[in-house]
Amino acid sequence: MKKITTIAVAGALLALAGTSSAQFAKPEDAIKYRKAAFSVMGAHFGRIGGMVNGQVPFDAAAVASNAQIVESMARLPWAAFGAGTDKGETKAKSETWSDAAKFKSLSDKLTAETAKLSAAAKGGNADAVKAAFGGVAGTCKACHDDFRAK
Image 1 (cartoon, helix red, strand yellow):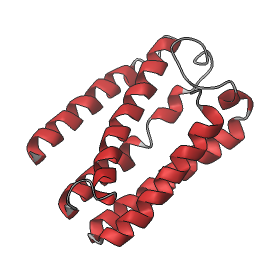
Image 2 (cartoon, one colour):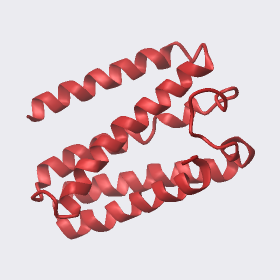
Image 3 (cartoon, one colour):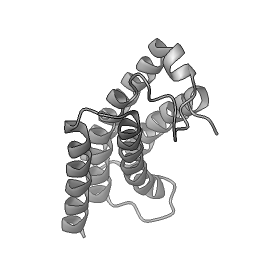
Image 4 (cartoon, helix red, strand yellow):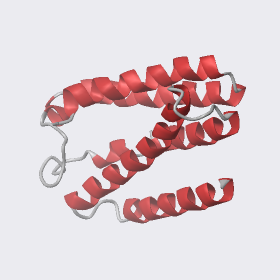
C-alpha cells in the first residue's frame, strides 16, 4: 500500500512539475496547478484527520507518511496566485489579491504549521499529532474564511 501511495504521489508531483515548468503560460494553467496542489494536500490531510478523529485506527507510520506529503504540498500552490488568476474557474476571493500581505502571512503560517505536523508525526505520539493537526486545520480555516468563496 505504501508503494502505491508513493507512486501516486510521485505521479501527481510530476504532473504538477510539468505545469510548473511551463511557468503558467495562461492564467487557467496556474489555477489548475493550485487546485491540484490543494487537492492532493487535502486528501492526505484528510487521511490524518480520520485517525486524529478516531474514525480509523491510529497508524503512526501512515500518519508520518501523509504528514510529509502535506508538508511538501503546502509549499506549492502560492506561486500560482499571480496576476490574472483571479478570473476563471476559481473560488479565490478578490481579497486574495487586495490583501496580499494577509494572504501571504497565512500561506507562510500554513507552511510552518504543516512542518510542525510532520515533526510531530515522526515522533509517533497520537496526542502530539492531534495538537499539530489542530494548528494546521485552524490555519486552513482562517484562510478559507477570508480568502475562499463558499
